[in-house]
Each structure stands twice: as structure tokens, then as C-alpha cells.
Image (cartoon, rainbow, N blue to C red):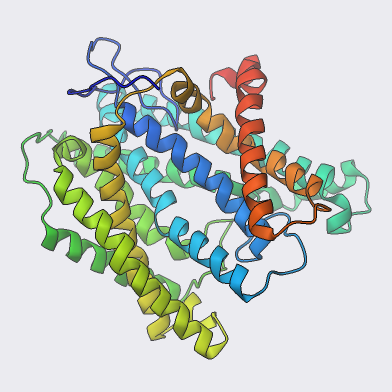
Length: 404
């Protein structure tokens, strides 16, 4: 990628999609290209997370390859998946929140919600009504023991309303649509238009600590009634305290110009703390589970293990998010042809990667290799195939162009 210095930042434009950074049609200032780069990186991590679940049996996914891995491999996957889960989806909600205020300011309530319904609602319905049935009946029919004809199975799927809980990874867009609706209602109710405060005070270390503690407390309390591994209509509420709070942070960051003004040293200090102190704390949590030979107490309830995991996730999340923001802003705020291609296709990749990843893992099923090796191979192949399919097929279909 050719390196180009970037010293100023852009306002949103009219054309928007959930995973592309908008640019003002009137502005001559450059894009927030570091956010584009962060976004496609998060989508790649999403694919890797689902590939990890396939081979680790830790979490929930369409297809998980038997047999379950041994202890050492399980610890490897548990660490990788816990690290990702702690921050990557929350980070996407923060980025999404960042672009909500200017969009609402420009469009108003009705147009804002109509556009969000098109950009977020239609892809979600496409997944629930087409892609999910394709995965279950087309790829995994034998694994699931389905014997009924497709028309019979599909009719039951629709009439039973099971499709409402079959959003797969598109739970993100469904949740984001709800968040945007709530934001719009709050804006209309308040009537007063919030003002940008480009010179507002930056967050302090004490405020980050307090916010992490609050996020951890909320997560812990939610998990007393909605532990890890449970969901309502495919929404894992055990993580939603983080998602909601970071979405709000994204809104505040846009109004107060935080992403552009947080100092490099501030963000990197938290990044280093997350990777060092956070890693020590994580292995302390793992050791507590190993002593009991069970992870049940980590999942939720009134246990110190659940509290420890909840607070660790919040601390690790904020540290990684702050570090990645300043790292990419100051060193990777540019794009070449390849990274722009990755950015342009990342929402389509997010939508279509499940069937491609599952097909790849089914093809690799008889390959004799350690599970971490198969995980790396499946991630790489699925990502490459999905990005190519997005560019060459999905985003060339007329009906999909507008939403992808």
C-alpha cells in the first residue's frame, strides 16, 4: 500500500452503508481511512472467530468438527476467542455510533430511519429468509438429520416464526437498527439539536477506569439472569451492556471529536496495559477454571469468577479499542487499491461469509492436520473466497447493489 500522510478528517456523505466510512460530497477533505482499515480488519476477525468455534467447540456455530480438541488446544482457542469476543463487536458498535449523529442531523427522523431500514433491515431479512435456510438445508441437511422436503421444512420455518431467531451474524445489523431507532426517538423527544463540541475535554485515565468498572458491573449483573451461552432471538444479551455503552461512546466521540484528538501516548498506554496486565489477569481466570475443571461459574450468576471475567472483558475492550484507534489513525490512515477493495466489500463479506466458511470447513473435514492448522487454513480460504465472491458476484447483482 502506498503511504500517504493524512492530517485532516472528513464529514459523512450522503451514500452510506453499515461498513463503509462516508465522505462528504461537498468536502475536499480526505476520508477517515483508518476507520475503513479498522472495519475490514474487524470483519476478518469475525470470520476467524467463527472458524475458531468450528474447531474448538467453544461457542455456538452451525457446524463444529468432531472430535473436541484436547486441553492444550482448547486453552489456545479459548484465549483467542475470549480476546476477540472482549472487543471486536463492541468496537464495531462504537464505529457505527460515531456516524449516527451527522446522518440524523442531515436527514431528519423519517429519512434517517428509512435509510437505516434499507441498509440494515433488508440484509437481515435476506439472511433470515434465504441464506440461513440455504446453510441448514443445502449444506448441513445430513448433519442436522433433516428428512422432510425443502418446501415442507421452509414452510414450517416461516409459519413457526423460527426465522426471527435465525439472523446468524446479522444479529449485529438487527441490533444496530434498534439502537438507531432508539436514538431517533430520543432526538425527536428532546427536540433540542445537540451541538458539536470539537474542543470538549478529552477522557482522562480516571474516567476510562470508571467507565470500564461501570461496563463490567452492568455485564456482571446482566449475566446473573442471561449467562453466556443463552440468547433471545439470537441476541446474546450477556454482551449487550458493552455494545450499548460503546454505541453511546461512539455518538459522544463524534460530537466531541475524540477519535481525532486522543493522544497517541494515551491510547497506546491503555493498549499495552490490556496486552500485559490483561493477559496476566486472563490466565489467572483460566487457572481458576482449571482448578474446578469447569467453566460454568465463568458464564454467569452470583460468582466471583463471573464478576472477574466481566470486569476483565471491559478493561481489555477499552484498552484494545483505544490502542487500535490511535495506532491506525497515526500510522494507517491511508489506503491503496487492495485495502480500499477490502473496505468496499467488507459488509458483503460479513453478510455472505457463513455459507462459504461452512463449505470450506466441510471440504477440509477429512484433512489430517492439527486443529489450529485447519483453523488458519479455513480462515484464510473462506476470507479470500468470500471477498472475491463479493467483488465479482454479490455486489454486481442489481438488487443487492444498493444495500451492499
